[in-house]
Image (cartoon, rainbow, N blue to C red; front, side, top):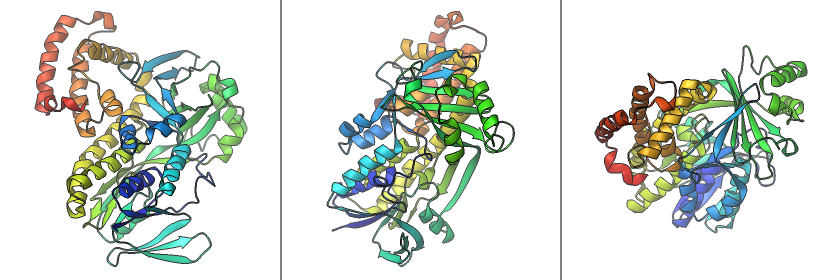
Length: 457
């Protein structure tokens, strides 16, 4: 039987193991942490995740969505909370059936691990921290929980061990890959918003409290509570370093997030006990070595969480890898370089779009000109449904390649500049003039090869 070794029992690693097991591979899956189903160590660490089209497509291909649906909550729009208490709303999609879904990383990981455990082709190994990789002898050394080292010889190796990937580090040390990890000056901390205090907050919404240099974000949970994530600079004014005592913390929240503060009875204990997470962008090249070793997910292309695409792009990795294995009859010498060439341009694009969205959410989202552009864009999608599909819709609600979505977004930005530069209200738009502009828009899309790819929508 064909054998394969996977490093990392998180979301990408477990889903990838299921795809490979279905193809007849015997999979050894090694995870450095304890079994999350028995020891949920992720609390306070991770941002609640947003599952959208790409991730759903990857899960559907493994017939997992019936069970995943039970643990996720629709988020139909952004609810934007101003410091004066006003709330306004921005839908994500073109219509009510286009929405993203909030889901707990821990719950989804546990579901995938349960499925992996049920497979006769998958062997799970927990508390196995990768210590050493001998790429040339195909030998791994793990540190176990109780001390002794364990060696494992592999035939083929996939690294899905996240942004701090030990396998990627080993490949770098051998001069096989180059990579950089660029950290944001901001970090995040997970905080809870009590379900007994959220009566005034819209259900099935992504809640945002954007302020110019910091932000509170809230994802809904199935029990009507909200998982909050506070994004702050590590140092300086209004930073994690500055909020070093209860008085400063309470004063800060009462001033900046008064409606959220009233629904956070455990704020003080959670703020000082929960860890502060870092956010980074991973750039790596290449992602493979011969036909023997491959990186996927955050290990290859980690992104900051402001476009909700980290998990979705990792699940897309799993699906596309499976499709290439089918296309090339499991010839990894072809699959690995083709996978890298296909995915690299797209994951670079989503990294850039995630950074752009970081600035949009923090500051632009409350700017009257930005709001006007969004209103005009929604009207364009309504009036020209076969011509205009926004970049955000392409990313979240289709499987259009990320690079294609970004290229189209650049053309759209130019069009919106032309429409909005001289107006202050959508009522001022001259739609006869827009008809002419849309003809030019179509020509520009044709130049980037978009017209022939409309079937992807």
